[in-house]
Length: 410
Image (cartoon, rainbow, N blue to C red; front, side):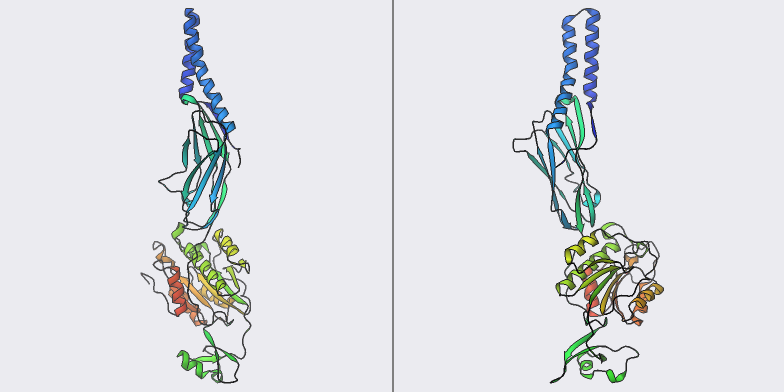
């Protein structure tokens, strides 16, 4: 609860006009030697002055507090803002206006403006709804109060409350399943199976060019209907890295419908899904900087809520940690940039490549098919998703191992 900020007070146009009329009446009464007219002039002069005093008294006696219910929410989830008033009587009217940015989602039918004529002994509460569509840390406030004196002759404007912080985290959608061998540490589709009596667990993965034929595991090959090779030993698994491409030049669109917001929602959902499956998850940006690691879902979402685009032109950066699988959510990529990413994780991985031209067809963007082909040749499994798909559909396509064909594919 607070009371500070810019203050202005004075007479309204009506009050100034009445005061000027009272002064003129009093002056004329002196010239005409009319005492009754003098009394009328003095009364007329006193009215706006008394109204000004009452407005100042209302300003001093009324206090306000703001409550956000809740103060942390997901994008698209309703929020209720409650303003609690307490203090002395209101003489005239108290007009309140709360400042809310468009990104915080004020409802046009119920703007945060109110007029209070009475505050009871227990105080008064007014509420208004928000529906923030865009993630971020939004400022709700300041709250400005305008006290109007009796008869509307005087007013006092003051900032009653400083802004409060509304944290809007990315929306998390429910995902199902996972690509084969995600979590094996190999970064490529594979499977673990018990092979015969007395044999230990055998880790296998799909055949890659250059693998020795003596390592082909024929039982798994028959089971999966594709050539599988045996790993010499079970690899140590350090977890999964989710790489989020936040480069400003790699995304298109505006506001909540931008391709970057799609990528953030998908990365947050993948992180949440893998955490629920018991996987150690680290989310990093395209430059390798950690967004949140090993701290649970809430810190991850809080960090993604305030994530901003970067001006980096490429996908160069440090190599990913040994023993970790990688799932990349990528914006527009040239074949050269895709090669940079593949070089950082030579063991291969999984990628959802966004066809950002479907978010904004007015600007030329690299063909995602070329970048996808570079990644696939490097051992990655890639699916391409456009604006006509949901994050759930993009993930399902990656799990199934088949690409999503966006609308208007080039």
